[in-house]
Image 1 (tube, rainbow, N blue to C red):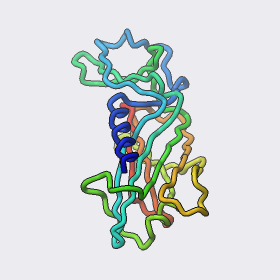
Image 2 (cartoon, rainbow, N blue to C red):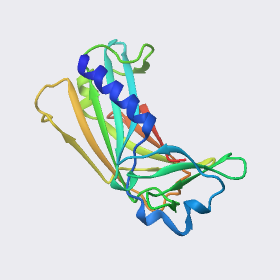
Image 3 (tube, rainbow, N blue to C red):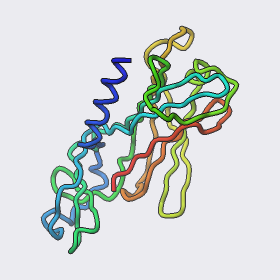
Image 4 (cartoon, rainbow, N blue to C red):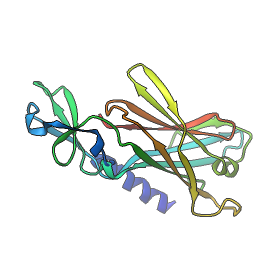
Length: 212
């Protein structure tokens, strides 16, 4: 419980500063941050971007799973979200060198931790009806990325999913997944939604990743 509380606090602190991935391929070489109208730093990114913590209560078993997710890429490091425009109503994304960044990194690695240790981290957890036990659900997680462009959206399956830490055949109250998605010129103002699914493909949790 203490470890999870420390982890949750660290996540909250990191989200104030924001984390990110290497987007050199998405930079616009023709635009410098100094050319923007009165740019003001709104958010800084690092190579790891915390996506938050969720608690899922399984029904009818009443057992709870704490979930934490982050997104990683070297291209996030040094990114800045700036206020722009004559009245500061818009935003733009620039690299550490001051070049405008137009796209997400070509590759993003999500780290997802699922644990039944300790008490629920959320006072009012989400509920999910399932006949599976918490251990079974954590052991067979599936993942999908939904990409929103305005009112339109499409879905992307992982390029690779790896469970690290304790082997699957060893009973353990925590499972850690590394989930890689290969992206191709996804505009930086699109919104990414990492979906967590059970073994039947039913969604029970989601985490957002937005750059703008």
